[in-house]
Image 1 (cartoon, helix red, strand yellow):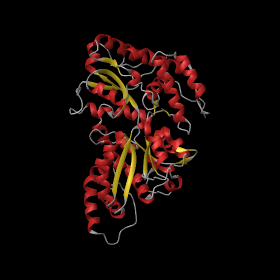
Image 2: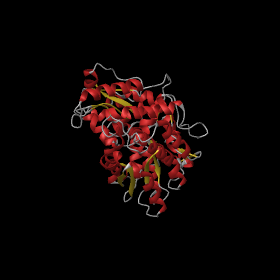
Image 3: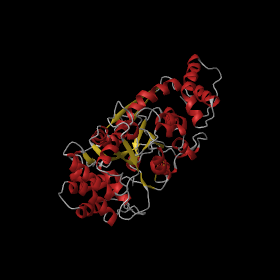
Image 4: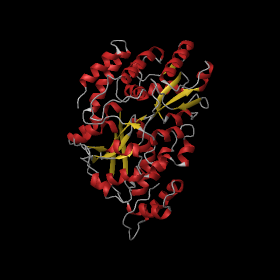
Length: 448
C-alpha cells in the first residue's frame, strides 16, 4: 500500500526496505491502476525512502474512523515506513475540547488530529494546529489540484492560512425502505412536504412496529444541526450571509424549523434523544422508512451481516422545498487532517497526513468494507472502482460534491453558535416554544 510520493533515493536498501517494497506494491497495485497512477517505479521509490522505524505516531479521531486507522492504516504504515501508528477515538461531542486540551495542557499525547471542519477556526485560534501553508506549497507531489474544490478550502483554510489536508468529504442523502414506501403506494420524496406526508402516512399505519422517518434531534451540532440545515438549504436559505452574520429569521429558516416540529410526532421516538447510532439502527432493522444521513450508510445497508433490508432499500437526493429549485449540497460534517502544534514527531506526522490523503490511499480507504471514509479527491470520486463499491449512491455522491455547496460557518465562535442554535431548536421540537421564538433566540445569541 503506497502512494506515488517522490523522495531521495536510498543508496543501500536494508532487508526491511526490500520487504516493505514488496508489501507496499502488493497492496497498491490495484489502486495505481484504477487511478492511472505512476505504477511500480513510483511506489518502490516511496517505500524505499520513508523510514520512521522506532517512531510511534498517535492520531486523535472520531469514533467512526477508529477502525480504519487501527485495522487498515496502521499495518500499511508499518509496512511502508517501519513506524508505528496508534489511534484513539473520542465521541464527536468531545473532539474539539480534547484537541485543544492536549496541546494547551502540555500533555502532547497526539501527533495528528482528525477534526470536523466546522471546528477548524476554534482549534486553529487555540494554537492547536501547525500552520501548513508553506509546507503544502513546497510539496511538488501532493497534487493539491486533485483535491475536491468543494471541500479543500472549507476543510483546511482559516484566516487565509491552511491548517490541514481534506479527509473524508461528507454529505447527507435520503435513504428509504422500498418495501415500506411500496406498502403505502408512496414514491421517494422530492420535496420536504412530500417527506413529511410520507412519514405521517407510514407511522400512522405502522402502529408502533415501524415509523415513517427518523428525526435526529439530539441537541448537538453534528446531530440536530444537519437535520435543520438540510431543510434550510432545501428551502434556499443559509445560516449566515456573506459578512458572516446570522440569517436565522428568514422565511427559509422558519420553514426549516417548522418542518422539524411538524415531523416530530411521526418520527422514531423520542426525537431529541435520538442520536446517529439510533438512526442507523432503526433504518437497518427495517423500523424506519426514511432517514437522512451520511453516504456511508449505503455500504452498511448492502451488507447482510449488518442489515436486514439488503435489496430492499434505495437512496435519493435531499428534498427541496418552498418552491426552491436551486440544489446545493450542505457540507454536513466532513473532516480535515492536521498536525498537532505539540507533536514531537512532526516530520513523520507531515508525511503521514500526506500519504493518508493521497489518491491511491483514499481509493483503498473509500472502498473498504463498511468504510466510513468518503472521497476527498476528484480522481477518487470519479474512479470506476469507487463507483463499483457504492453503486446505488455513487452518482448522487458525485453530483453533491461536484456541484454547488453550502458551507457551514467554521470560525472560532461557530461551534458555540451552532450549539446554541440546536439547543433552541430542541426546545421547539419538544413543544416548549414556537419556531419563530427559537430562531429569534438563536439569532440574538449568535456571536461573530
